[in-house]
Image (cartoon, rainbow, N blue to C red; front, top):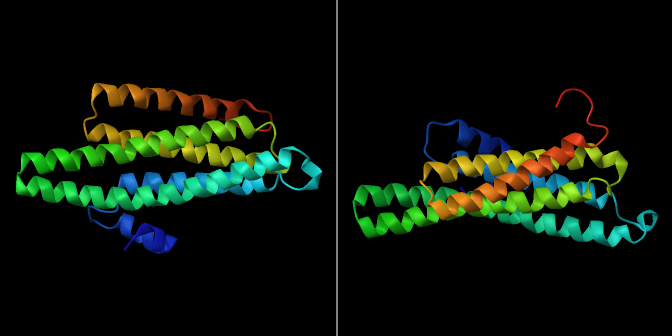
Length: 193
């Protein structure tokens, strides 16, 4: 089963099961894909003649987020394969194979965290430009990406990242914090944060 080709109901059933994959890393990537898709939809509602020059910018953002959603689902599938490979490598007790598969297991959540930070930042910049009727959807997209990015950090952390990887991740986590703060501070948040 690939995550890209499964139904949402089947994915949820697979996540609920007592099986090692899919797990938290794949779930984080799916949440990021949902955030990107929600952001793309929101951007598309800021296109057309009514929006003038902003229309082209909104359409470009939507298309970027479309591709990002596809890439996040690819990362979900890669996360499943990387975990399965790492498990097999640990059984083999071959240090070289373990090191190689561990590097891949670290790269995937690192890539996801970077993508979440990038796209949450882009959506935060779009907040004040978006169709005001879709403001809550832009915020939902940002919050999904921020949650997915923080979840990716947890997956990265459990795989014992290097100091350099931790420093890069800290930069991305700070960017997520800024994007989320922008979403929470913009008028119309309503209720408790």
